[in-house]
Image (cartoon, rainbow, N blue to C red; front, side, top):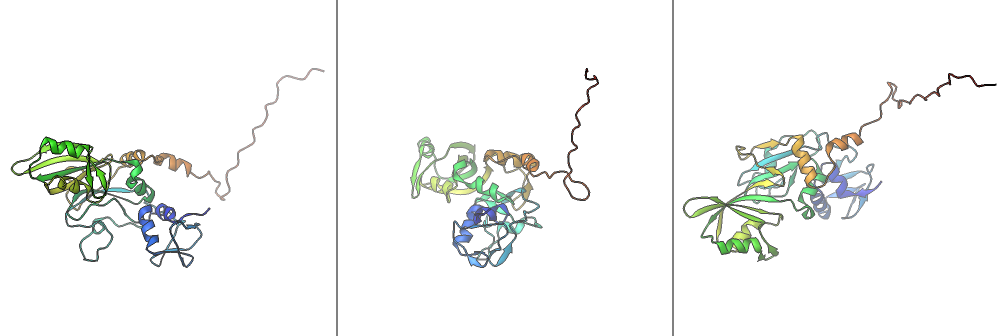
Length: 282
């Protein structure tokens, strides 16, 4: 059955759906030798290439459901390669025998903190999709005077160049001198939204770090440039937060029928009818 190519690429662990759509729009994906357009479909038996490299759509990666919590340091970019030669988050991840790591959202080069990395393209797509409204939490250090009126405006909503934006919550996290720390939450992932919200109030963001994405927190003690691999229970939490089927049910659905040594499916023995112990009267 033919499916949209971005969905097939995501299922094969090549990229999230959004990334796959960008690859298609850039003319980097071909099917059976023809460069395709967004919305085109393919079957598992078709020859699909990304940047000239053949992608086996019928071979799902062995590590399809892995998720990492990576502590991105300042100075790294969230892309596979950088034309300026700057270090990327992908330089510090474990190698995979099949599939590839997909970053869930981005942090700009001057922002540190939690970036989720997964081999599951469908999970990445759902985690980033605005319809699921997953909450993100940031620790932000502010240089400048912050008063109650400013905090009320930031909670109520501020008009930015790309529309209204606001924080779901703002919590005072202490500090000394001119700098003060706050923890803020929001449910959007617009470009530099946390910085732009604070800067709209004429204060300066001197440090910014993401400490939570949905149900997953950045572990205290995890050093910048290091990662934790999520447990099965944590992955199930993530899947539940975006309405995905539990892994246990997926495994049950894919469980093959028991077979004889020769490979043929094992047949059920017919149930014999019980013979009556009473003789029929003449």
